[in-house]
Image (cartoon, rainbow over all chains, first blue to last red; front, side):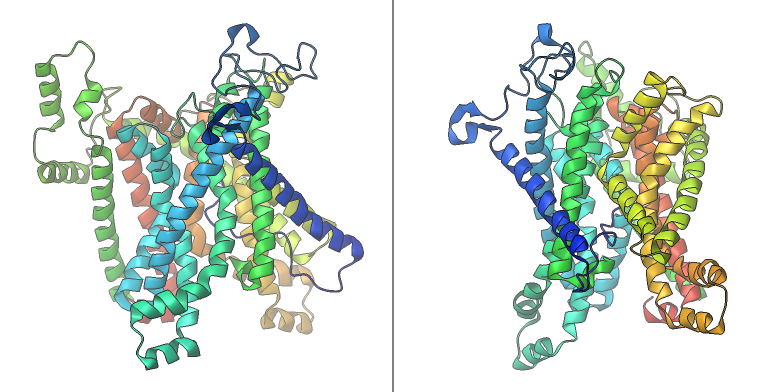
Length: 309
Length: 307
């Protein structure tokens, strides 16, 4: 798993008109390809089946992710010698279709990330604005907690929760969210500190606007851009965290297909069935890379100041 | 300065008590650990006896007080699973973790310095793009997956290296290499971006005007200052080390703290998991304290500004 900072200085320097034609094309591609991959994966997650529309039989995934078929166990992908087109990416040790599980896995990974992003950004923004605007002891106290939270590995919190509550979707979301608000709080506080000194805030104060009103109506709308950038940059990070938790057995409990627990399933079978671990791993890599590239692009477009983020 | 350190120390102790309370409640939200330990054949009396043994028949504040006094005396309880004091288990496992983490960290740090400086000084060259590529790849591929793929090629396919466990020097190669690869990208980005900042500064231009050789400007003047900025994220690097150790030890069945932690979670061994979490919390707070004091030492403004 990656460091908690999602600083992505690495790609995309600001576009200078002097760039060569070739460089501009490459720059465009680092945006277009990730967006295509992300859209495909999101569509895949939505249309894995249409049970949510009341049409359980209409599905993109060829099989149900939990359907076992022992005679078909450990079948290789279709291009290998004993492979068949019935199971394009092969099957695992219980005869479950790898392709279907990867497709359904997208659902789990994306919904965990989305939920965590919503929860943590809300908490982090609230605390960040409070700390930045109120200052003084409130700020010192909140920032101390933020520092500690950023240094604490989320894996440990997840383990503690799993030991007490047992593994579940809810435990994973709670475990990641408990510490995950910290980077938002730190960034938004910095932005608020800058905004607090600006003329329009002073004017609002002179007119007699209450602190709550200033924070809500004047500060909040101005931190939305950096907020969106950091939310996007968090997608990749969260997918890796969720996968790592599931891999260690403290994430999404089987038989639900999560990319992390699929890699774990195939771990002791790499010598006979490499495909079980390989495909979910590639899926994780693709989504995370696309998310990071997209986030970098968005940052350069919306808020180049955040390059040091 | 003394006042600053004392204030920070008090804050750290308060934070530690807070975290201890948090861990204590988190472990107990599930309800009754005694029921978890009970087997199908246990009678009501057996369960009651387990409760008394674990001190669960007392009130929560009382339990917390007992927990704190025990911890202060260095007694973190017995493992439910192995029936041994957890402090002993951790003491046995810790050297193995250190043997894995230190070389990996050293290699990653060295690589990060070399590649980060290379990327920053030859910006937008092939070298820089190579460095960016490694960073993008290293951040996108999950560490556990890279480790498994490495095992597949080096141990299963080509049979060059052992798959897991402790042993001679050959047992170290795969775990250390994969862990270093896991740690490298984050550090490398930090070095690169803070190096870019420093190279832009006036005193570097001054050094150039003076005619100092580029080698000395980069490795002596710039790098020293570029390394101060990453201090702020020392805490996050520590979190990365712990996460890495847990994952890599699990993949390679390396009997360190991370490995017994994962075993403990599987067996729902809450005293063990609780103890390790508490220990990590102490380290996290300690590192934060050290970083703060170092900063206050370097920059007097911090000392007087907020205590």
